[in-house]
Amino acid sequence: MAPKWRELADRFAEQIKSGQLPPGVQLPQIRELVEAGEGSKETVHKAYKALEAEGLVTSTRGHGTVVRPRAALKRLGIARYDKAKWRDGDEVAFIADRVASGRAYKRNEQTQTVSRVEADSLVAEGLGVPVGSEVYARARLVKEGVQPTHTLTSYYRPEHVEGTRIVDPTPGPAGRGGGYRVLYDAGYEIDHMREALFARVPTADEAQLLQLPASEPVVELHRTTYTADGTVVEFAVGIHAASRFAWEYDFKVPDSAQDRKGQE
Image (cartoon, rainbow, N blue to C red; front, side, top):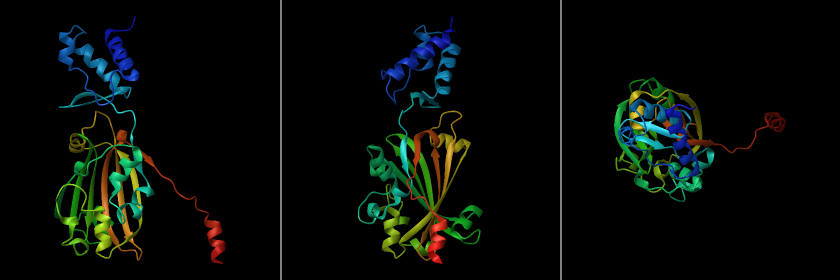
């Protein structure tokens, strides 16, 4: 015979899988279930921990236990930076992800702070400036509804962005077309970029800011953006909740042997 906590966990699991408890719904507080006769505090706690381990719910301090969304948000690869989206329209990168995922969005779901900071070794290397140089940091927190999905901090050389909308701390993208449109209008048209990704354990501050459940990793992104002549016009660091994104890349497969033949 299964222990009481397992029976309780199985009952909630069935309700979640059947859709009776849809994504985003908060499960009853432990105290409420104890008072309803579902078992001791330890029993309910073990049941919730089992659901979390099975990927059905997330539990965070201050937000309780919530049914996990079943479909992760698409995080597009090169397609999210299509010039037609931001140069000719107003579909900045995070909005491009939402559109591709068939999800609703509001521009003010991106908040931001802008400040001048001293470049640490990572930022200095990314921008190609000496350590300690003053640079602009544009830090954004992006949410889907009320749930944070990721942070993104872009760093710029002051001579590239001084006096532009990029250094305006108003919430939302930096005007129509966002930051890349601002750079384009200032004469710095982006041409190519490099992205590096790795997973790691979040810091305590990151776990709190992104409302991460226990044991969930984050995916850290380093993005370097260049003009056609190789000038770095942005270096960005993003911290993404691992379970809230599905990374998607679509690209032409290279053939370096054919390329070499063509150059002979």
